Length: 42
View 1 (cartoon, one colour):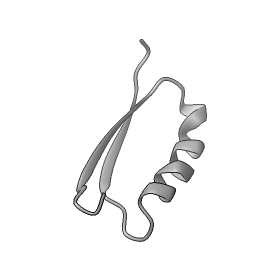
View 2 (spheres, one colour):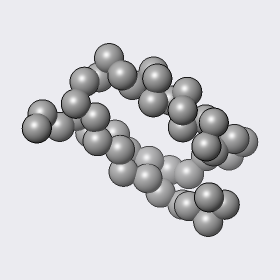
View 3 (cartoon, helix red, strand yellow):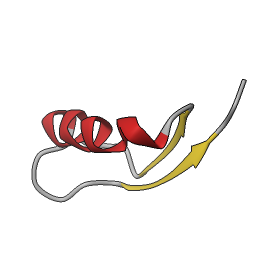
View 4 (cartoon, one colour):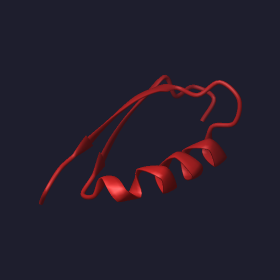
């Protein structure tokens, strides 16, 4: 995970965004890689 520089995140409901941030912080403590988050209705 130390080599990750960017993440693309696709979610179906923005209500889950806070939970995603918490999980993201667990996987990437300290300085986090850049990312974007897009809502996608599939």
